Image 1 (cartoon, one colour):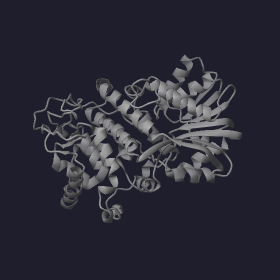
Image 2 (cartoon, rainbow, N blue to C red):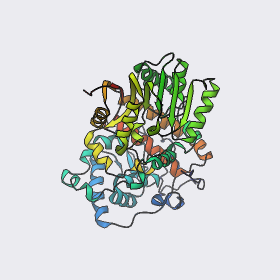
Image 3 (cartoon, one colour):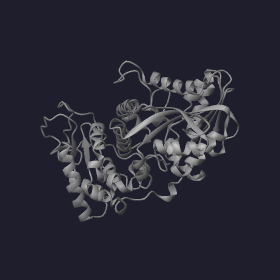
Image 4 (tube, one colour):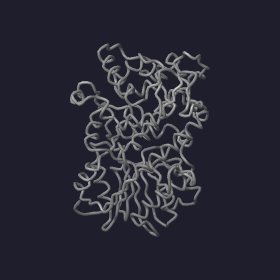
Length: 445
């Protein structure tokens, strides 16, 4: 993916501008600054669907205004103006350009909802809180009779997003090769991009790095990684799990399709003087070679795509030595929600993870069984991911100047903030979960 071009510096806005002058936090204090965006300033080449409004659709816009507007009012999310004195508790959502907001939502649903935020047409004093309220009532936003007609108004996923070998490389580059320095603006020093495991909430008395090490150690303990273990990792990240496994005496082969991640992981491994124990391969999981005592794959299945889950589990099973174990960390959603999402082009699939799909527990169980694997343990800890995402979002917000220096414009920054808050809301509302599974050979039960 080409690095986003930097647009002109945001200018102070008058009170009646698309980005209001008086956003306030829940207690009435000014909210944290959000990179200002005016639609007229958006780079139309980089962000074509944000820079321009969709063509007028009077019926869809009217329906969106009626259904979404009524839902926002019912959920006490609507604020009449940016500077209104609101005393009710809870997050608020402010429409800076209501006509544009409802036109986008009417035309493109949740994609339009996100693009409207990117365009600065709405904001919130508590973005994650507002999205959590919406996520917790997602089934109430559209009446049941209209939900049955969803195929008439949702957009199908682009065929080009499928994770063929070429498609997978392209999709991974789109996200993970943005910039190692960008990810460093919000990840902890371990550069671990998956859910941590905390001792308490909120996480005020331990570092995110220690919580990430706790997560990694639990996975390594699950599969008994120690001196001499032959370990396969599918999905290298920036190398922290491989480093900790090698420090235990394991010999690690770790696979990634991200050139940026591979380069930095190798540098970190060399700095730790563990090059003789860790082999970082720029290789598709379908081409994994060798047999291993243990395999670990952390939040990789979500990037595989439903069409290739059989190949993913087959690769894990094929590379496992007799008696070997697999530790899998996976985000999950309800099965019916997964089926709907699989058929729908979403904000996340358009802007963040093209080709990705979060599986259901049922889908994982089905594909494990088909590959000749059975589940020995399955533990969920979704509240830990909500906390992880909160910390990432706060770090990203605090380091916006660094993102700007790297060339990521205000529209990208609002997109990334929305992605992190949207994900956090999914876990806080229990729409999403994250689980650690222990798999081994045999019939699934």
